[in-house]
Image (cartoon, rainbow, N blue to C red; front, side, top):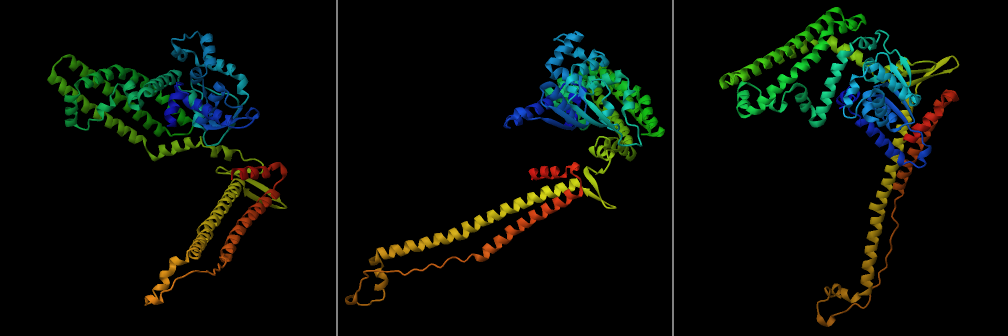
Length: 523
């Protein structure tokens, strides 16, 4: 799951397994190539792949160069755990003891970002990026942990909006830090036991126990059979929920300021902003209610009255259930067509398609992800979808090769099932003739069945078989095979003529021939 890894690696900076896997895979491939010492290894990336490739490059020297589009940026927390040389340098510079690496999160983000950029400045020359100003990943790349390396070409893919970066830069650092702490807690716990373990670590709720409850009677049943587990869970929630509430409250407290920035940028209306703030406040209030219910229940339990405790436990469950339903209702109010369209608009800034469409220049343009070249012949302009042309050329050659292979299989089948069968039957006949001519007396019974008196009994002293085998006539089959082979030849001729016609439309600097050569290798 990419978003699961995104949370653990890029935001929390606690996981770099995919970057390490990129290094291992690339190393295995390179080791299988002859003269690999002269090989230039290039990493092509989009989204999370940029984080993976860049981390693999900075940590393990996996690539010689990296080219990325709308990449998830490098994270200095992640590099602290992945790159031992960087980790050593950071510890020395900021006096972080080996026994307490988490202190890195207390260092000023600006200080460690500046240190990281300087540490990797030589390698950054081999990193090249194209980034859309409307990419959501670009929007979050300015918060703590992220830093950008290499030369970057910025592209405006949606001129109707200013992009989200300025909005994200206005979020207070303490809000980002609270979210980061949540991500770290989630990572540590989920690595031990998955999502349920993470929920229990952050909120204190035992999901395995809760999932057994679907009503009052089942709650009573679970209560009577799992008393010790329920006691432990309630105490755990009471301890952990306040901290979670504080972290979430940081977000809701800043909601008015944050979403006003969305209004100012034209993403949402004032009414939509008010709806979001209202419902987030409601959600916060309901979570506060959960906390109050748990606190009261703890007080009841401290009385050590089993009857009161039983009623309090069930009452708390029903109260929490009702509050969860209220939270769900608030979420439903935010799940409107307008908000879904807005999210789709924001998400589209991450697509490569938008980047390509904004890079139209000269005789080059894009139709979706297809590259279109325009050639001028006389007064006319001819547009050619080069991507579709190369796909047709590659797939056409592939189909013709497949057809040629099938023809060979047909020829082999004809030889096996017809010619070899004919020869086998001929051999059987010759074996039988030899047997008859070698032992003629064994066939006397064939003569005797026509003689009725013993005195007229006869015997066979010799048999001579005059055989003649006519050649198998397969001329019709040969003709059909020949026609099939000719169709393959005509197909190749058609494709090469088509290639020549396309190449002749464009000048040599367009290097169309090289594109066809690459497509031919792919087929």
